[in-house]
Every structure is written in C-alpha cells, then in structure tokens.
Amino acid sequence: MQIEYPQLLPERTPVPVFDLVIFGATGDLALRKLFPALARRLAEGVLPAGSRVVGVVRRVGSEDDLARLVAERLKEDGLSQREIDAFLPMLVPVRVDAKEPDSFKELEKVLSDGERVRAFYLSTPPDLFVPIGRNLALHGLLENGGRLILEKPLGHDLRSARAINGAIGEVLPEARTYRIDHYLGKETVQNLLVLRFANTLFERSWSSRDIDHVQITCAETVGLEKRAGYYDQVGALRDMVQNHVLQLLCLFAIEPPNTLDADAVRDEKVRVLRALRPIAGSEVLTKTVRGQYGAGSVDGRPVPGYLQELGHESMTETFAALRCELDTWRWAGVPIYLRTGKRMAERCSEIVVTFKPVPHSIFPARDSRTALEANRLIIRLQPNDGLRLQMMMKVPGSGRLKLVPRTLDLKYETAFDMRTPDAYERLLTDVIRGDQTLFMRRDEVEAAWSWIDPIVEGWHEYYAVPHRYQAGGWGPSQSIGMIEREGRSWAESDGGL
Image 1: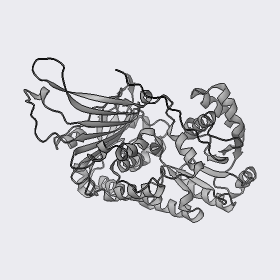
Image 2 (image 1 turned 30 degrees about the vertical axis):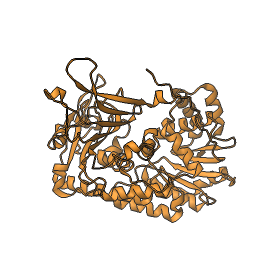
Image 3 (image 1 turned 120 degrees about the vertical axis):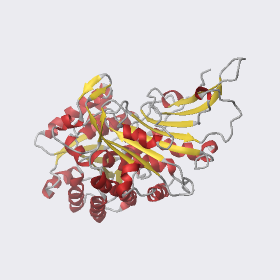
Image 4 (image 1 turned 120 degrees about the horizontal axis):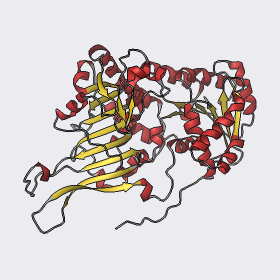
C-alpha cells in the first residue's frame, strides 16, 4: 500500500533587498550554479523587487556577453523564457581588475545605494581572495554590513589557510565572512541534524554501543573536466576529503548543540574535527590508500586514464580511502571509513551506518545465505536523495522459517510533493538573511587542515606512488584490502535508492 503524505507547501520567505556582487561571473561555477540558483529563487518569489546581481568581468567587451551567456545557461537549466526574461533585468555587468585598486571605482559607482544588504561572492582562485578583499575595503564597499563569500578551496594547507583567514580578518569581522561548502546546502545533509535529534529511535542508538562502523563515500564519474591545472596541484585528499567529506563526518558525529544558533552548531563541529585521531608517518601505509585512475569504461563509454588526460607524468592521487577514529566517549572504537575518487563506477555521495548484530540469534542459520545480516542505514545525498533502513524480515509462507534482508525506503522525490532546491539556492539566500549555520568558521577550516597536513606529509615520505585502478571501478584493490582486513567490506552502492 502506497503511503499518502499530506501535500506540503514550500516556505518561501522573501529575503531583504540586496546587491549580490559575483566576482568570476563568466566562470563555470557562476554560470552553471549561481545564476540558475538565483533565477529559481526569483521565480519562487524569494528575491524581492529592486535587488540586483552584479556580475564582475575582466575583459573589455565581456559586459555585453554576460547577459547572453547567462540566458543560454538558464535555458539549458530548464527555466522558461518568462523566468529568464524576469531575471535578466536584475543582472548588472561591471568590468573590474581584481588586482587593480583603481578599477574598483566602477564598482563603487554601481553600489552607491547603501540602504540594502550587500554581499560579495568570490568565485575566483584563492590567490585573489586577499587582493579583492583589500580593494573592497579600500573603497569602503565592506562598510555598512557588507558580507564576503569565499568559495573553496581555502588554501592548500594549514599555513596558507591561516594566511588567507588572517588577511581577510584584517578587513572584515568573522561574523560577516561566509566560507561556503555547497555540500552543506544539500537537503539530505541538513536532514542529518533532524534525523539525529528529532527522532528518539536514532539518537539512542547513535554511538559505539550500537554502531559497528561507518562508511562515507563521495564518488564521481567525471575526470579532470576543465580543472586539470588546479586538480593536479591538490589531488583527491585536499580537493574532497579536507572539506566535503570531513563536513559530512562532522554532521554525522556531532554532539547535540544547545540550540540551532550558528555558533552553537559550529562549536560542536570543531570538537569533532579536533577529536579525529591523527594519522601520521608510516601509519599512512595501513590507514590510507592512494589511487590514480587509468583508462577504462564509464557509463558504457571508453575514457582515457588520468595521465592521458593530463598530458604529462604525475603522482597526484585521484582516489583516497582512509580509516579514521574519533577519540570521544560516544565514538571510541568505531572505525569510520572515508572514500572519494574520480572516474568511479557511479556518481554518489552517501553515508552508510552498519549497526552491531543482535547479541544472540534464536533463528537457526542453515548456511551463509540464511545468516542474520546487520541492520544498515543508508543516507543518500546524491543522486536520488533519501534514506534506506535495511532490516531482517520473514519470507511469507508456512514452510520452514526463512529470513531475508529487506529495506524501508524514503525517497525525497516521493515523500515531498515539491521540487528539492539546489544547495546554492539555500546558501545564497542564507547569506542575504545573515544566517551562518551552514558556513564554515575560521577555526573549523584550520582544524580540518591540521588533520590533513600530517597525512600529506606521510604520503610524501612513505607513499609517493599511488596505486592504479581502472576507470569505471571502485578504486584500487588495496582499498578493499584495508577494510576487509578487519572483517568488513565496502557497502555496494545502489544508485536507484
């Protein structure tokens, strides 16, 4: 029997009138994510009349191209012509050289009205964060409550992250600095807090008493795309684990905050990061796996290997798996396995919680096929957001008692009769509202780098050459060995959820 959920109307609380300035307006992120997110928010009545989206371009003539590029992208994204025509008048192009202070005078003219929320989105390489911040401050554009949005990556190690944070802190207080990680805007990620703290069933079992181990996987099917120069300098560990994967770990393992106040939540996330047991020196050989994809087949089509795409030799990893632990009362002794990679068999981001088996089974197991399987909770972030709870059930019939694992499914697309907003839709409006809950605080970023840096150093000394794996698989065989040495196995992904 299909459960009928009552129809729910989405909350569409308008934000205050604002100017959002996007540096890097013709870049991939802005065109693919930021402008479509804003256009959809406008179509839903969240963005008020009089608000403006100021697109900063560098080259002469790019001002005329911006509206055309945005319109083409919005059409590709499925917006109607009426929605596109409504959004384009909000768009104000302006040419600014991020490193040239005098060019900010043009931006100053555009932003002459100070009676509105003003936010600056730095969709640029991180080496431009500080020059842009200083030039904005030089022209007084950060006064009267101006906000700065910093796109990841924030540095490439602890030292560089501290340098950026320190320089930005000289021109803007922490309360108006928004470090964005789009994973935190995903509906299922936000639902982790609700799952934990609004449901007695899960909160009482959310500890080492009942949980055997946890797996967090962020897998991509794509290769380098247009990021070859950047990616080869950082690799999977710094590109994905330092931010996306550790953010998921924080929200999974967080202790109950006293309130949902932004700093109360972020205080608890920092405690999780500081409780991570260090992995350093030769420990990287047993607790981590580095991999690099070779040629193979993804989604039924042949793809080249990493070195072929890159065009030169490289030891950069495109896959990383880690076994970590949290030194806390709640999580002591629970292995947490992290895994991320490019050119994997499937695009998915999920958390798999495997519970401990029942202490004693009264049901006879005639063979391995009839043995009890541990309960599992699968929290799927993408694609097909939802939850699955695997449990043992009796097969119908009057013969011998037979048990099989079956799942209870909750799919967002069927449980809620409404469109699931993109992560950037939520995050951009949170900035305008002044809500920092889903943004990273300075000490949070630095705590993550403090854990990552020793692993990078250990790799340089003990683990310089990554293992090869075939594109279209689930990474090198060594990652399977790392988890199977402890009598466990990676959960098989199910894209259909």
